[in-house]
Length: 326
Image (cartoon, rainbow, N blue to C red; front, side):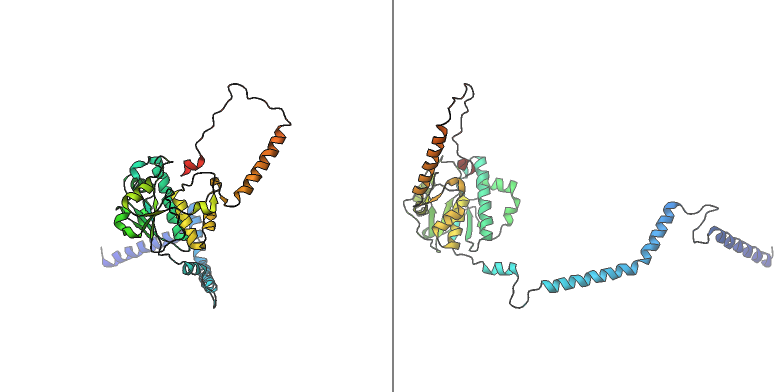
């Protein structure tokens, strides 16, 4: 076959392909395979893409407007002359105290696991209150180990990241100088009139429901360190025992640093269940109680009394709510 014949055949094949392509394209741009048009899904996808392309400039304009609005908001939030940011202002008003409060955790073997858990919650409360106090103390946790540490590891893994606290496995006598220590115990005959900022006050980390009465006082005497009790009896009359939870003692100390007044510190912290009444007002409270009782008795005397039916007598528990929580 001659070269001219070969060229002619190639040209004819090329024209045939172009003709087929032209027939496969519809006037509106939809390709066809034979006589079939695009599927409904393909058409929707194509229209969606076209719409997205058409709205490109509109989206760009909206992004620009949002960015400009955020810039204006930042400018309006900046403090002007004579004003300060509230968070920074609160931080500047915090004045740390040189006072040291030590929670003695050396009683681990004397507690049941349920009491260890209560002590853990009390320590958590101490930490939280100290972090937001206007005059935070230097917080020490000593003799940490045994059941308490295991409970903290199991239920509060974040404790290892606590800030503004000194945590030691050693006994407090190895952490603070002996002459600087004062053990706070309700059994001490010494009453704490005011706080000495050079001292470290020790709070016994023990939840025992009076099973080990006087143990903190005995420990203090054995170690030959100072001891004292809070001046609770001088300001407060309570209808329950004077032994307070670890966090209550801790919070009372913080409140005293803030208010400089024992009475206000006690009544700010003591829970209502303690039945605390200011000294000098208990007589009035007693008279009010007697008056209420007399009135109630007079009302009851006008109505016949009925004995409870046999078999319906209910024993009442003598365990106080306060003992369950401390």
